[in-house]
Length: 238
Image (cartoon, rainbow, N blue to C red; front, side):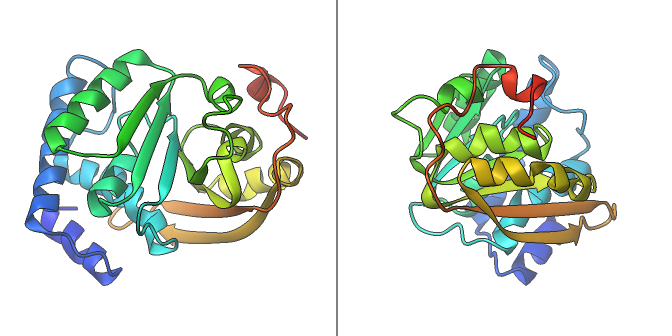
């Protein structure tokens, strides 16, 4: 989608962008392409594709969940900053923490933060399993998000330990979500979560399915979770 379509479609969802915010998305795109020549950040580099598949897609959770006020949001495995940096641009009052296991991506995000003049954005070079056992961060976030990181039974172990009781986990998934959900029911319950809402939409222009799964944190996560690095993927809760 072109920039005008991006702006118009968001306006239809009640998200109005200022000139400054539109300029931030433009600068984000240019930095993404520039840095992508030095490191593999994304396979999607055409401007209209980035606006559709990265920027607009990253903002779709806000169609169903209020990203208002100084909400504390943690993004697990954000890669080049998706979805939390596009959300931060649209909702500048939120506080964003990004956890990623690759140092060079953190270097890009640091530059992005400075160039876009974003405040209340923090990056941690860490594994989700280690980060989730740190008492400084464990059960401290209003919202913990992930986009295209792992299947649901694994993703819940990465995310739910970081969500405070009363907060939410938001998983952004494609068409495979419906099959994954069946295998994640036990993990969601065991880790203190409860399925709240699942919203299915179609990404404009390319017509691919997206699912926004919202899980409420209703009780504390048992202390043994998340397990040591690599274990959730090798032995998912089932």
